[in-house]
Image (tube, rainbow, N blue to C red; front, side, top):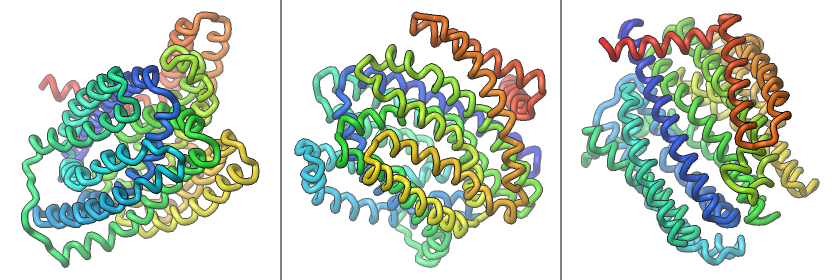
Length: 486
């Protein structure tokens, strides 16, 4: 594949991935707002506890094989079937295990009504065994429009069903039904677009080859998901389900925005890097562009979200959720650092260095777990627990960036210089937005004014100084729509 073709496919994939993430985030936001008004913090806290087990299980089901399928130079249908049967076997074992242990989980957290919702929600693991291969195939081919189609249909349908269940007083079951419907619908829509079907084929040699790459990602994924979920487990037990509901709501919206923007760029970058991994200078250019572009989008979004957090929560979720504002603001800072983490880690994956990926996870989780445990059991403060994620996030920017100085010649100091303009301009624009908003009493008008001031100031300064990421985004949009008109 020549440079022009790769660029065209990458641009097209990037835009469709942005559409997919954006559409998903917007619909999910509307659904979550409606359900937050219908349900109590305790019910969202119960969902957060269940998702700990489901998300950890998903790490085992995926097992890093999806990334191995994307990264491998040559893949055939037999490889895909092999991965599917491995994933299905793991999913079945995990489902039976969680089904049996669900009563113990419910009893441990003092939530007796948790048993059957957890058993039903865990079915997403079985669905995921098929879906992970579908996604790997389209990601490998840079066919992200198919992911867009599946995501939009799934989020709209599952959101409607979930809200209807909440209106009918289904309580926690409304959240479970929404999650399960999303996974099932996504898999079905993808099946109509991706002609691959699992065959009765299992290739032991290829399974070993793929696993030699993926096992490191599996361990890394378990460590990361376990670390992210640790605070949920501790808060649910050490404090209360209500406190966990507030923390999970505070995390949910910055996470959605961060994953929408950064999550659109990183899978595309992984596919592109995997195709040109022998050309180190070209890989470095791709990684730098991904970091600059992702930072340019995410940092101002998080700055604005943190500045307008209180009126946003008050209007959209209601006053019963105002206690989650400090958590939301802290998570805005945490997710503002997301690009430097994911860009460096995806670069290592694209270069086939899952060994370094695993070493980094071991280092980060060692000090991260210590900080969280100290806040929970010594300081005994739920706010300080979340603050510890901020501290570990800052330290981890250096840890994640360090290996790429050797792997692709992209040092930490270079990365800091590349992201500094976005942070500086966001601080200036955010300060202006806060200043202007402080004179407005109406919460709704305050949000509109702060958003307008932040947007105009940020884009205006970026345009004046001809920021590379800004000009790249403008060019990408023009190229995409220009190609569509032709």
